[in-house]
Image 1: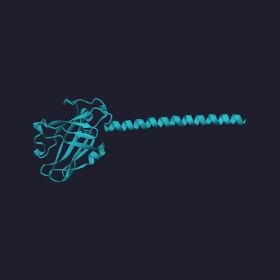
Image 2: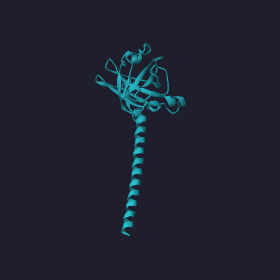
Image 3: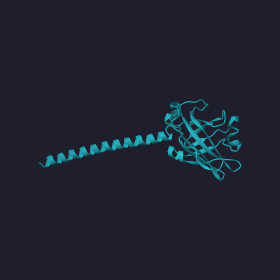
Image 4: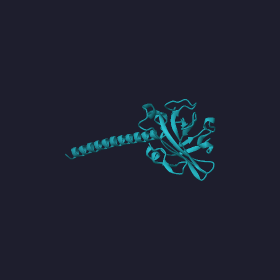
Length: 201
């Protein structure tokens, strides 16, 4: 009888251990999926999942250049909602003031042709930025790691950006947020000195 009890106890222990191992494997699997999903949302895995939504900043003299990127409003077309975003930028001017500018942002190939995704995790994501109010003013910026890198030379069509009071050539903005909610409430200074939630949808 004692032997049967010992055998029964051993079998039960093995069953519990087996169930425990299975649960552990399932938890690890779920955890891995959650990490991968978070990385995809942040754009760390490359491909079409990468999105520019969030906040980018850099120190510039005594102040900061700041950029917020948000999804298009729900009233936009389905095509725009899928592949286009809105941005606003508060830029430090050469005269010590600041300038607020807005525009749209789309996924782009490195040669400047629009496309829907990039090549892989080691390839920078490229974004075409078009500035509101300036005809044909479009630049190609690269997001690599946690930085948004602007081109060393801007086209002549962008010379009137902020009335020529700012210089974004070669600028590198550090990503400080991947959050739509944080981007929406980021307050920026307008030309009249008032603060505004420039990316509010």
